[in-house]
Amino acid sequence: MHEGQDSFTDSPDSEEFGPYLVYERLGIGGMATVHRAKKRGIAGFERGVALKRMLPHLTQDAEFIGSFVHEAKLASSLVHPNIAHIYDFGQINNVYYIAMEHVDGFNVRKLLRYSQQQKVVPPLGVVLSILCELCEALEYAHTFVDESGQAQGIVHRDVSPSNLIVARTGHLKVIDFGIAKARSQPLHTEAGRVKGKFGYMSPEAVMGRPVGPASDVFSAGIVAHELLTARPLF
Image 1 (cartoon, one colour):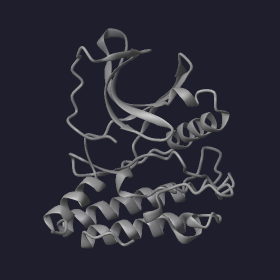
Image 2 (cartoon, helix red, strand yellow):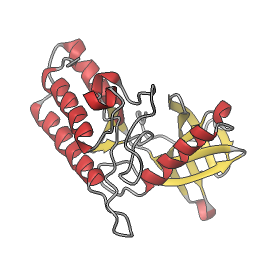
Image 3 (cartoon, helix red, strand yellow):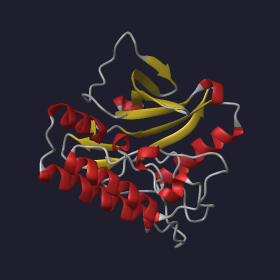
Image 4 (cartoon, one colour):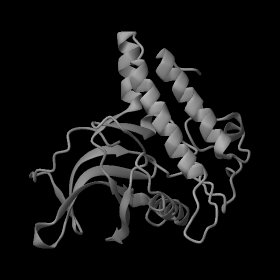
């Protein structure tokens, strides 16, 4: 979702949203849209962000609001060089939003698509760098301890190429903790509701059973297979 040149030049198509000037859309999902935006402050202060806003028709849905608030709280507690930072969370004109780090780069899905089209595998050094930094980010989340000293054991639950962004610096950023769970919460999916992308889900996640860190590791293994072979595993 966070792709393209990091340009925040004002344009006629920009939109005012509280202190944010919103530009082109970067992506859309079942719960929210993500736009490139710029937060403006006093004395000419500006910061480029990726602005995630809940879809209008969901603003009265308590379940979706709860999920959105949950994502903001959970992701904002994680401070790691390979996890996209959360800068701000709030509500403007009855619309909930999350302002997060804008990662100037491309997602791993795009890399895989290019490799498959060209019938070549990505360079081994690039693959190893992506996988090492992905594992570091997941280990941090899985072993995360909050300010009170309580282990949270955060499980991402949607480790997939579209949620892995390679920045132009060469480093990986994991994004979208929208369906993540902490140890302090029930680690299961509601009956009949499977969350995540089927091609990257662990067997227990597909069956709606309780999931833990091993589920993320399974998903990371599928990503590793695709990067090393340029072919989908499932």
